[in-house]
Amino acid sequence: MKKARDPWYPFAYEAYDRDTKDLSDAADLLYRRLLTVLWTNGGFIPVDWEWIGNRVRKRPSTVRKIFEAELAQFFTVQGSEMYQKRLLEEYNKAADITQKRINAAKKRNEPACG
Image 1 (cartoon, rainbow, N blue to C red):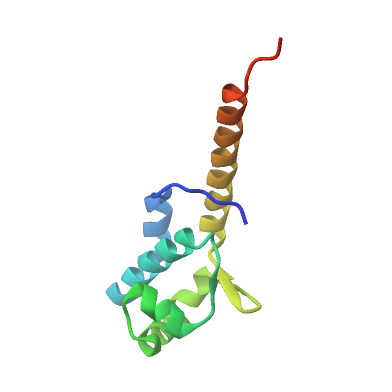
Image 2: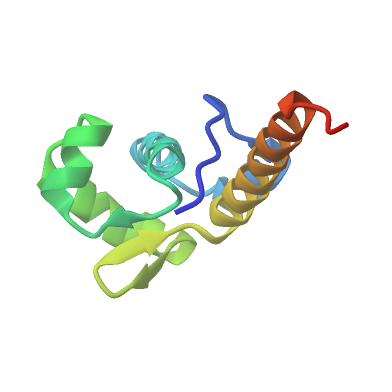
């Protein structure tokens, strides 16, 4: 799995506000926390309500209820994992940039031939 390494992630707040204006406050908070958990786990998380609940600091039953009622439309479930399309695209971009920077640094630090 590619690693982005950055402790921050790009957040398209205009698109988020436009797409989530009808969410309840609880769903909005859960969505933002899920984005953070996704980012810190490589863009994918298990569809395991206990696991998710522990990471977003909510009861698993509450997470599942809010997710199914308001957030499922924003996520893709693939087998036993889920992801959010925009976040995964941004994660992969960041991981590619990170890898290019690592490779450039290694190249700079190689001894000169000759």
